[in-house]
Length: 318
Ligand code: NCD
Image (cartoon, rainbow, N blue to C red; front, side):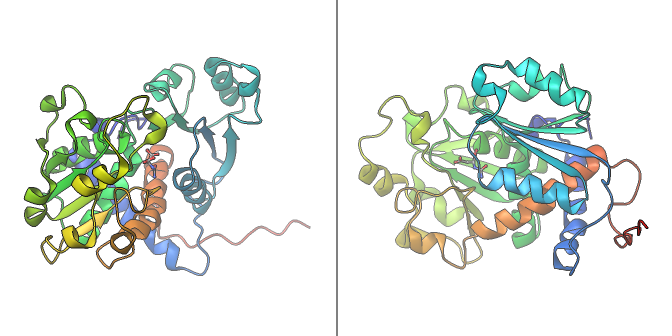
């Protein structure tokens, strides 16, 4: 693996397998009474979040703590960023404090790449604008592999607001590398210009693709990134692109329903679908911790085995 994780497209098929296999090993820690490994003791991870987040920030924090790293949560609100400090000065400050990993979420695409100019440690992209969210794609792949046994040859349908979705872009790149077949479905206004060049197919007809898929991934309609009317009404959107119980019934028996969260219940996904047996929404969150542990371990951990050693007894200081 490279030093940074900026794009799902930087991962080879072997990298993906390595991360998912490592995550599967590390997942075992979650079932122990003491959910902690000493692997990253003495290392510092900084959560640098300029955009709101519930799942991703806490997931990285839990992951780093389970590996015994120190975690600093740096949110733009309440820091000198609110006083106008530049990204570069913020980065240089973190660098001076000895951050081994900087996990960054920012509203501007490309911010993680810029940070690599100033940060000596690893930079992990936790979502940059509408661009990428590689650890989400990894945890989605982990969830698919765990539920369906493989990634190769899986037929994955990604539905909705592809235009504003860094989750969709990272998933398309990673799933193409892993040998899955992705179809993007949404209103023409919510599919990005140039989508023909992506390693995926497109369709405007959800009902036509559902009976032939293994995975349906619903995307949140990202109202906060919309500066125009992309569809006539919420009701019309749901009618054409929402996943309700009737549509879910047309899926093959084994197919799963995914959503990265946060969900707009009643808009892109009906509550009864979100809470159904097919839904992997909460599994995705749980798997996110294992996958982020794997990413932190592989980027920072060096040669020690990730798992095997029991947590060391704390030294008693007299
Ligand atoms: C996604 C994100 O922030 O890109 N959520 C997440 O990380 N769980 C998707 C979204 O906001 O809709």
